[in-house]
Image (cartoon, rainbow over all chains, first blue to last red; front, side, top):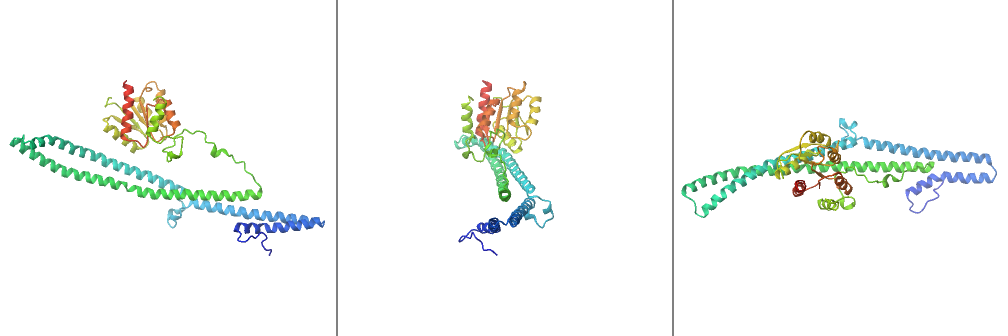
Amino acid sequence: MPEPTASVSGCESSMTERAQRDEPLVEYAKTLLSQLESGDALEAMNTIANLHHARDQYLFQEVGKLTRSLHESIKNFAIDTSRAGTKVHDEMSRMQDASERLNYVIEKTEQAANKTMDMVESTIPVSSQLGDRARELKPEWQRLMRKEMKPDEFRKLTREVEQFLEFACGETAKIDSNLSNILLAQDFQDLTGQVIRRVIQLVQEVEDNLVNLVKMAGTIDQITGIKHELPEQTMADDKPDIGPEGPIINPEKRNDVVSGQDEVDALLSSLGF
Amino acid sequence: MNKNMKILIVDDFSTMRRIIKNLLRDLGFTNTQEADDGNSALPLLKASDFDFLITDWNMPGMTGIELLKAVRADDKLKSLPVLMVTAEAKREQIIEAAQAGVNGYVVKPFTAQALKEKIEKIFERVDA
């Protein structure tokens, strides 16, 4: 067993690996050189064949590694491990699962918005009515305070005030209950937050897996000498896309967007609006 | 401003249509109808006599900007006041909408006040 030649003190594992990988090649090269110098052409041919073989061996190993990590990645993409043990887990791809989770977010937020609007719509007439009846009573009450009221008017007013108080007690209870229902309707935030966090995690895992695959494939390219003509402009080629983009989540980092209604108004007025 | 004018609200999200409808009701406009994208809005506009169109931009099917262009290209509808209420906030898009003949542009998220101002401004000009 030859000792690693390129061993540096505290060397990184990749250095050791490389040294081990290159060791046979170095040996073969030395042998080849001495064989050629001593005019032993036939043996030299054999050594070249051995060199070739060593390269092929190494290539097979790397292709094997690539295939394994490809399988690993496909497995990771395809199976939701959190569902392992349940029957659906085989069919349930994590991508599909992520779409379902996001649809759940849309549903939940829509339900919450509708429930809140239901409650608001049923509260507005109640509070308007309370206000209307208070406004009706106020001038009568002021007449009483100014002692402008006749006894029968006063009796009528006390009846009206009593009815109003009765009405106010009942209706404010309704408003209270609607308000606490509005409060409860906000519970979606916790649920959708958790779901979205999981999807973010999946996206990150997918990205990591893809980066690993690209690295693996890069190693193969290095040994085989394959060069890819990569179209560099895929990212740089950002010709103005005017299609709909939805809400801008980072207007402060972009200079092609407005950050609010004031800027819209300023832009439109600069166009003569 | 005629409070009884007929208004079409176009947005793919029913909650947003409902919000706009409620805000319009608070402003006194109760004669509203709804559509969920340009494809369903255009036949409604052509078949009936709407006074005002409020539309989102980003919708599946026919988008708001396509709807605006279709409205301006239609002889019967070309002078219909159109207010865009949208999350689309790129300068180019606002310019494109202006060039296509939009009457007002409200960017989401918006306030009741902003919606009210834009509607009033549009009808000040239309009535003038």
